[in-house]
Image (cartoon, rainbow, N blue to C red; front, side, top):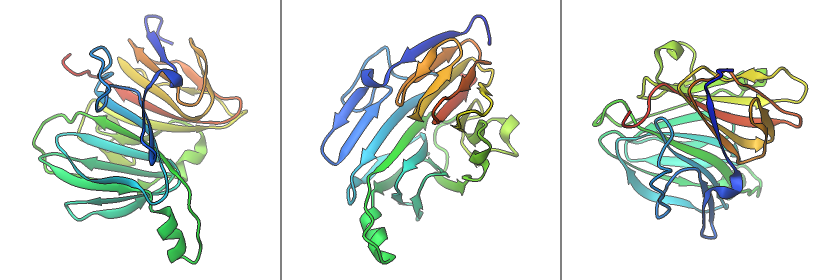
Length: 256
């Protein structure tokens, strides 16, 4: 572990919250009408929203611009449609990235009830997902979309590069983002398996999406807890009961 690293723990219950019936959303950073001048980003990560949407509901068509948006589903399924012709269902283990670029419209819905009845069942469940926004290297790029299933790779229990723009991950990240200073990793930690070591980077964002984990230098982390690391990685991350952890490795920051 880098001796000079600063570890800033953000507990789940301290996050901004939006609950409007069909949506239960918790925001790690300023979002919408929740604004704190001291909590707008970490590194190049601007949004880390932990969302639960009830069946049959979701986000109607809305615009985005000049943002790399990565969606990671933890439970259920999320239907995506956008203005450049992409339609798909995102589910656990499927990495998805949307580059808003010069402008894109999209919607995201929990369509589990309809999808279940189409296949002869009536299965309906909430969809739980984390949506993360990262600034691109440059404004005005062509909008784009990419997805890839990586469920098998996650069985290793190690940190798997899911979405990256870093040259070091050019051949082995699941999907690419338009920021050469940032990479998102996911680990599905299992009890009794070796701890994983965090990447060495000036900025790290460690988010416990499910379960509970233990981070060197911090101790116990519950579901929804996050740690913002400055000044280098190398810390070990483990679990006693199982956890799914999202780690952003970032070698630049906004305005710095």
